[in-house]
Length: 185
Image 1 (cartoon, one colour):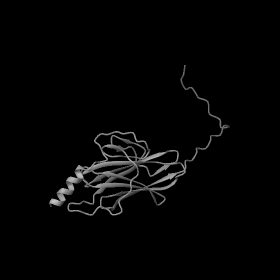
Image 2 (cartoon, rainbow, N blue to C red):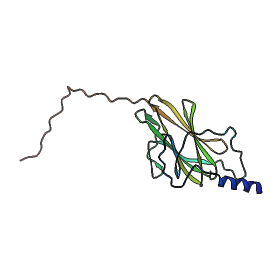
Image 3 (cartoon, rainbow, N blue to C red):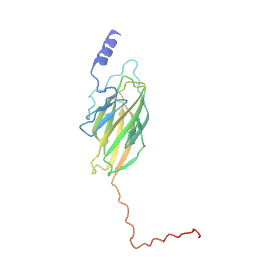
Image 4 (spheres, rainbow, N blue to C red):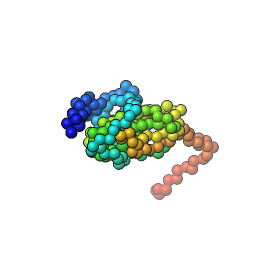
């Protein structure tokens, strides 16, 4: 028990990547945010996942959404498709029962991991989001997996990043009917 308390004290004293109400403008375009905003760079998962400890909860994802924007810590939409005229997308996740753990958003493009973004979960209900800037040529299938502290995938969601189609030009020979005044004098 003393060993567990010592480990917990060490974890609590270690520097955290999150700062309450910090609103940094990142130098890179891939950012992560949670109930506090921070700058991030893609991180990699440790080769050996955190061992399950007494009191460990697998946790759950209550909601997740691909969105172009976050307003008041909530996604503004739930996208399944996005066109390549949009350069960035965010992935929002509401986590439950993961307090004290690390959660990860693993971004995959056509089956290959391109980024992993870590979050320290600091409460029983914790909302986090990460974002990814796309190059227009990166059309295809994208997936974000949510991974708990034991290295288990607890949720996945897919996004199709498609080539934008242009709207057909209107025929210039089409006649537009004249406006008719129906008022009587």
